[in-house]
Image 1 (cartoon, rainbow, N blue to C red):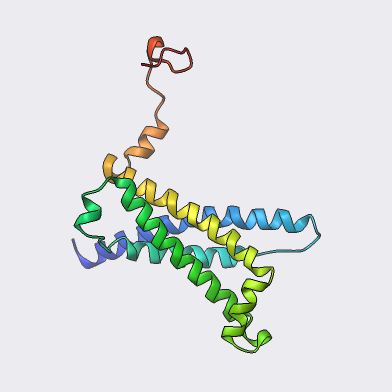
Image 2 (tube, helix red, strand yellow):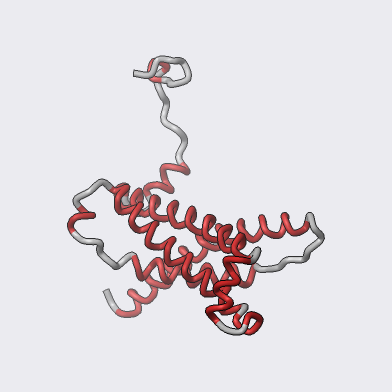
Length: 179
C-alpha cells in the first residue's frame, strides 16, 4: 500500500470516528441546551463539541494500535473492551479536569487552586456529565470494534440494513417456547 493510500485510509477512519463521537457530543450538547433553556440561559457549544470529537477520535485511533499483551488477547473479548474503556475513560476524566482547571487558573490564582475549586464548585457536575456521556460513547465504540473484528468490516451494517430472517414459531421467545 502506498503512502497516499495509507494517508487516505487514516483520514477516512478519522473522519468516520469523528462523526461517531460528534453524534454523541451533539446529543450531550442538546441535553445541556434543553436543561439550560428551562432556566432561560443561552448555551451554544457545538464548535467545542466538534473540536472535542476530532481530538477524541484521533486519540482513540492512536490508542487502537497499543497492544495490551498476550494475557488480554487470551481472555474473552469483554476483558479487552473493559480495559480499553476504563483506560480511555480515565484519560477523558483527567483531560476534563485539566481543562476546567486551566479555564479558572486566573480566577483562582493558579492552576492548583483552580483544580481544587473544580471539586468544590458546581463545575464538577459538568465534568461528571461529560465524563459519563463520553464513557458510554467509548464503551459502545469498543463493543462495536469487537463486533467489527469478529464479523468483518461492513457486516454489521449489512445485517442491520437487511430484513430479519423468518423465525419458526416454536423458537419464538414471545410465544413462551424458548428452548
